[in-house]
Length: 113
Length: 112
Image (cartoon, rainbow over all chains, first blue to last red; front, side, top):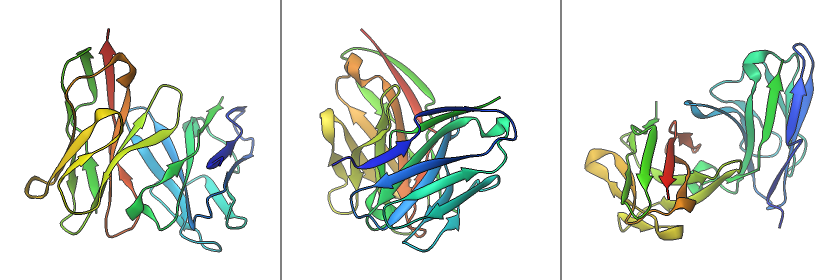
């Protein structure tokens, strides 16, 4: 099993450019999540999707949008990238929500210049 | 609101030393507790988890953690660390929101 797959692994954007981070899981999990990881700040939840067809804001949603395309795929879009969005982005999935833990993808390292 | 505190931000140990990383959470209800590890350049992997029952939980690679409800703590321990344990360690809690809340992480460096 591949688990949770994220693409791309690395990306450099110019300020104002847009891009979509892709995430797919093959474990038939219901819930999917997007986190950003910044030094000294741990992981902060951007958006999540408790089940197919639903999405909700997390702790730091500003500047981002998401799409739960189907049960497998959950994408994160930056409409107009800003240097403050330079970070490592992790996608995660869970069968029954956070109470049972998550499986994480390998991350996308994004730099906005 | 739920929160998780990891008081040790950066720990440096020599090989064979004992390890204890602190984790405290703020939530009075039923919680599930987790420790994740992130090796350099890799994604987060589950070390161990506590749902209920025996408060002493054993995980992979010789790690264990003890849930002390009265202290709202879930400290991670290992009797003897190895160089390969160099990584960042995250404590996480899940409760009423059914989402994981992470601490800010502890960076462990083990010197050979």
